[in-house]
Length: 227
Image (cartoon, rainbow, N blue to C red):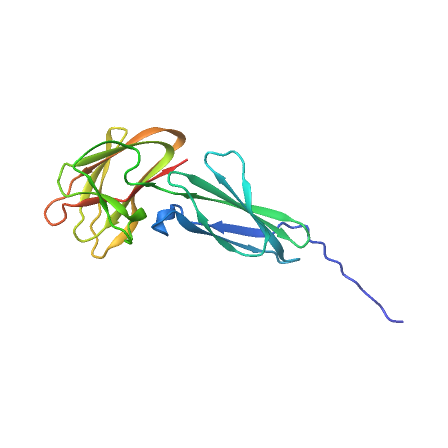
């Protein structure tokens, strides 16, 4: 007589999911729009859909911006000075779920949160690669600009080029390091300095032009404050 054997596999394992977005939005775009992507997999039943949620730093709750989608990316437009947390929840065909969270900081423009300045001037360059089409620039050694902010991290967004030079960095009034914006080729919207703290607090960031000779210019393109 014939012998029959049936094997039934139950999928109780959560799917795999990874979310990616730029740490600082300006590294990808000269405006406040950036791309959020995710990848999921499930070896047994396969991925059915994704729910995509976002939480700005000023909010305690996530809100859904994509529900039961099968797409794997979206373009998001943020607001300067905000930190956005993205949660993507992957669901497989057996109903198991897994989530992944990613954070992106949208920088302030170079003119925001200035406490005091001397020798740094704002210049507008529409349709340029500068963040939001402006920079704060100085060609005089000793020129300074100081920003005041509240957060748990800060990044100085600058330009690098042949005619750009050094600057001294002070955090909360104390000298930290000297940075160099010289580059043989132009590089835009680069984080040249960063610092973080274990808790959110009020801080100052002072930039002092330390350039010389053919590299006496220093540009500031934005301030990325994490929260």
